[in-house]
Length: 468
Image (cartoon, rainbow, N blue to C red; front, top):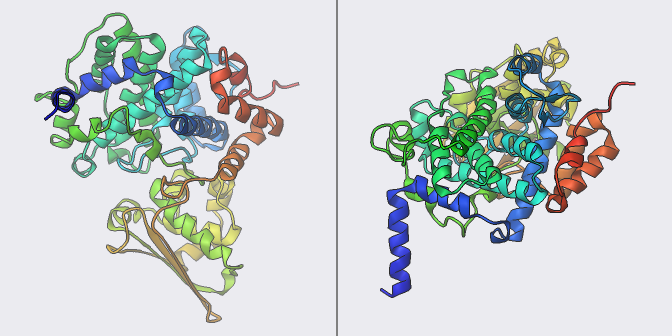
């Protein structure tokens, strides 16, 4: 073995023995020039998508409850809430922006661990950058650090074991990403960043018992706030475990995942960018429904389908998707509608559309649509499908028969959104609240965020016009 090979092997062994330290050193030493241009571009697309999702949050039924709670936290107004005229305290802004990004269930997802990432990473990055008048380049670096740390910690969970214990990844993993973003903006060194990760891990929580309720979205906004607190406390010299990920007595991988796979968390760190595996959703609805929606729109692309001539619709999904979603049939609320495969298929066939109005009370309560779901749509499990696949088959009373199968949804890294699709989604999310002109300016500034001296003008574009 050459001296160089021996040195690399020793570094790998050290990282495996202390993966938290390896991630902390990576975060503290990261510079924007270390990040390849395609990875930077991907991070900017993900950032733009998250801001757009937050602007779409006005269609969320429970948003007023979260707003009232955030306001009750009090504090001096220091930071912008996307889509809000008023400024809020640092904690309130982070909590609200975290919820707004995930509110209408159209934000990103890291499918390897079923973990939404931007709701926990972007809010502390924007809030701290605004408070400190950080440059756009520094802000982008903090977002990249947060995205990369979140996805790497999530990858090390060895998800099947983690999921079998009932844990929900955004609330467990998300605080690490928020802490990495905060540590970058606060200029923490490697030791302080390691303590920030320890503080993040000490706040990790969230289980699938909340499935089907808005609490699963609160896991994400609370994760953002936990990351902020972790970074701010570490900056004050507050200390935590030296090895929060693999500590034998309650480390995250030890306690939450039966040991996990620490090697996966650090494999290729700094050379291979795990954030590039983040998916962007094109439509509102749960992540496993995205392949189903992709298949339905492929069927509609073959020509119009008259719903009054449909005899049956059969949807086949992998067993794990069936287990999670079979309980959601005829919806009783917006979140039920977003998670109900029969409803989503039915409303798309009727409306030729899948956006926020399709999940509003006036639509999911429609008696004709409810009868269609009950009488004509069947959901079945199919073990032969890929983990991210789906099949939709339609038969008609007139002899019509159509079927579409997909391996992954549009927006998955193997089938990414085109530039036109992403920009169309951003306008769809933002135009109604801030206007098309402001949306165009917002897109331009986010995609050139390195040129911003601070975020004041960029964030001002996310506020709706003041009432006359």
